[in-house]
Length: 306
Image 1 (spheres, rainbow, N blue to C red):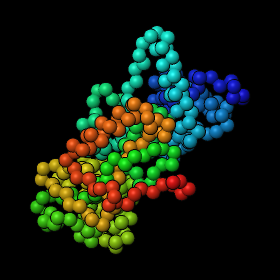
Image 2 (cartoon, one colour; image 1 turned 180 degrees about the horizontal axis):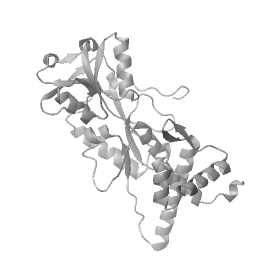
Image 3 (cartoon, helix red, strand yellow; image 1 turned 60 degrees about the vertical axis):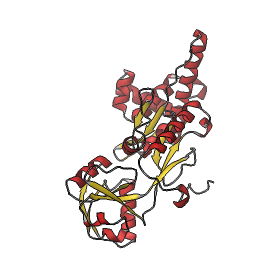
Image 4 (spheres, one colour; image 1 turned 30 degrees about the horizontal axis):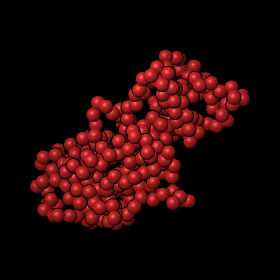
């Protein structure tokens, strides 16, 4: 096929698929059949000569070309909206869109959320994809490696803390080391999550034995199990323990850096700068005490980047 014969309908349909990464839900939103959407996406990939998505286990993920197509479709839609508004003499309506995970919304961004902001909830990978495809104006995520293709200003860093009942023997300490966790029964996230991977790696390097109490998804459920005295949990320092629990910093675990992420060419976009300003104002009011960025190890950039 010739590139010049590419219609605007195919990228627009693909952008909806990129939102869901699920053919069934995307087809329902587009009011077409799932086979018809499959055909649209396949023909678009054939036209461009690039795969637009890949399967990773049970999940689908966009390729860089897929992210580029989705971003192009959204840019085209925004330009069309601005053009029509100009023709009709009305001001275009642009609603800022923020992407972040459950923990960020619960413990960092609560004061930022209001009806005038569109929200996307997803893990780190989905947050980055939402920004890369133009679905989100700004994302917030914990990053240990900075993405080479995005601007990622640091928002705050927090120590990692051990959360326990306030009558636990370790609660008498003002701070802890990994060695203090020897023999502890821990409530931890599923094994594929970055927090679990990093914690297990640190415990193994320090030769600290521990046992698994239960696996749980999300900080609230981890804290709930600690409240039930199922075990103790290591969480990010921005997480506020509920009554009856206390947190103590583990001084030999690395700090956790929260970054904002946005496309480089949108650094001066009012939607991006407005969200960043609101988040920084909210963080200054947060009850959590963040560790100074100058005292923590900065996230790495991929090899070959500055």
